[in-house]
Image (cartoon, rainbow, N blue to C red; front, side, top):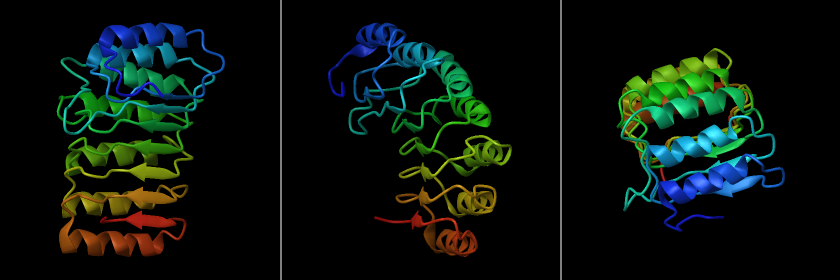
Length: 212
């Protein structure tokens, strides 16, 4: 756990180079380390063909915005490649990183998800994800991306009732999903009704979280 150490892009780059030789570390937490796209890209590049790491946390502090994918799409492109070629990682957390605030970044994530076969848990909380973003994401799952996904956490985003309809429709194609967290979204009564309706048909879904 190397979180909250103010590593910055330079320090993260050193860790990334060490990870290229890693054959023992299976879980890594680099959250809240004042990283920009340069730091993210170095981590993703180093792990594209890593055969040992199974859990990766790159969360930003919501209060300080100390992790951000910008200013360009280099990190997002590296993320797409990383997700496409790495089949060892089973848990990925990218909370509060501005994925939907940087134009094109979320599309890169979707591209990587389409080709990923290993993820079981994905946390995208606090990324301002809207209905238009979630459509492409769910299409990627429908096309065979992350076939074993068990937990999808979309807490504290900007999904409204329309987004809930899209998520509900997508549940039909996510038979491996056991947990879905949509708490702290603007789902309102209409969205709540839609999701509970779809969830009742999705008998495989063990836990649906719509509030705290």
